[in-house]
Amino acid sequence: MSILSFVFPDSFTLIEMLLVAFTDQFAAGVALAAALSNHLITLSTGILALSVTFAKDVAKVIERKDIRILSGGWIFYLVTILFALAHISALTGALIPIDMKDSLNLRTARIFGLCQIIAFGIGTSFMIWFGVRVLRAGRRPA
Image (cartoon, rainbow, N blue to C red; front, side, top):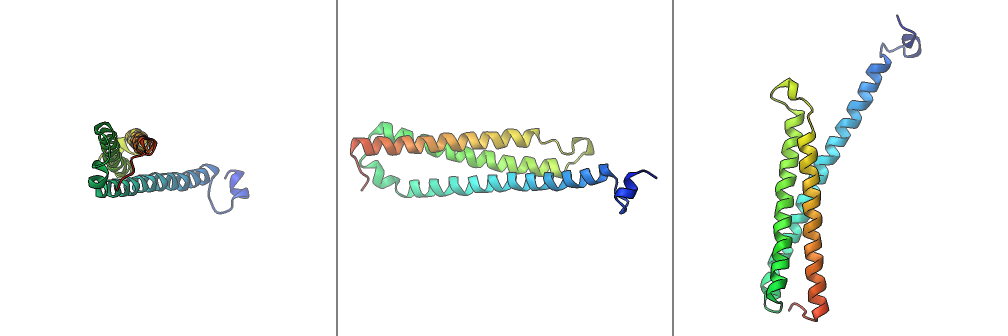
């Protein structure tokens, strides 16, 4: 019988208590990472849908270079969606492993998570660049 059993009468050792706390924190972290991916998918899809909807009106009043910038933004938003799906898949694969030795290997999930955030940032930068060019040139979409 250890001295911890007097301090913690519920038969939990300090290590067991730390593991429970770590497990809760780990579960919350995985849930937040999955939620971030879901939010980026939603934002990217919404931005794509809105900009594609008004693209025919915008294309009439902008230069060819501006269309390329807009297309670049679209491509990076699509890449964001693909990386977010890969991120969620990697999280699922790490939490439900086929082989126990591969359990909780989150390196792949971290890589896809970082890639989706970078792609979203680049896509947003392209859209801002496009908006600034159109506004500076005084060409307003109809």
